[in-house]
Amino acid sequence: MLELALGDRLLREELLGAGEIRIRLREIGLRTRHGGLRGARLILGAANRCIGTGEHRAGRRQATLRRRLHDRDLRIRSGELCLRCVEAALEVDARFDFAHFWEDICFKSGPLVNPAVFEAKVGPWYRRITDVTRRHGLDICSLDCDGQIDALIPTWISSGVNTMFPIEVGTWNASIAPWRARYGRELRGVGGMDKRVFARGCAAVDREIERLKPLVDLGGFIPCPDHRIAPDAEWDTVRYYADRMRAVFGG
Image 1 (cartoon, rainbow, N blue to C red):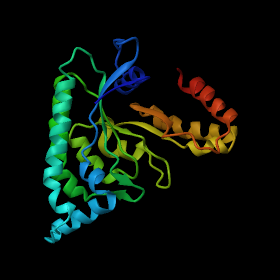
Image 2: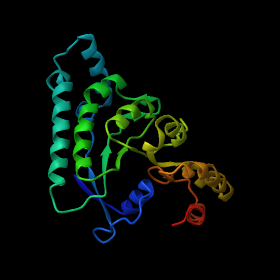
Image 3: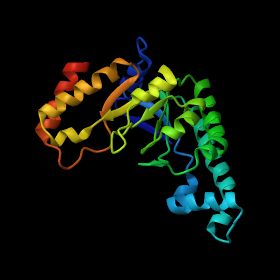
């Protein structure tokens, strides 16, 4: 699946720290979007997907939908579909700026799947896809996964994914800082801004921007709110935030 995304040219420029970035398609960045390799979850539902993994490991295969649409078939079908779509998309005349996965396989306490299973069964498909995108010059490969993603980052990094999004502050205080300390500058990120300050006034915005400064100084990090602005946000405070971000970080 292909998507036109406003602002992607800026994303690439900031993350790579490169010089002149070619402006394509009237300054609208173009990315390949690979969907996700979470087909079993979408077909079976999150709860059945988690239970199904346990049943498989325990050897208790039930005569249900989980048996007919078992993990191996779904994994291969999802992986092949993503791979073939990417290969077809990259054969067109468009010049893409970066590659992007949408996975959403974590929640506030961690992954919905055992990290070792994810590494063994899904990691190779990531590598096959990112090998293709690299051959076409896409050196930024980002991934959208909500929740506490820490346990899956090793698989993504080793499989060619180098940019995490959205870095939700949420209840687990996600931050790029510990990830950068562990994985180095190869790991980049977008997000990590605490949008709750929009309900707390301009002083809270100033404190949040000060908190973000050393993270931005790390390089390869673009701070922004994750998802939608909450309904308790004050419009004037959001405007103040936008003006202050431009003044402090440029743009």
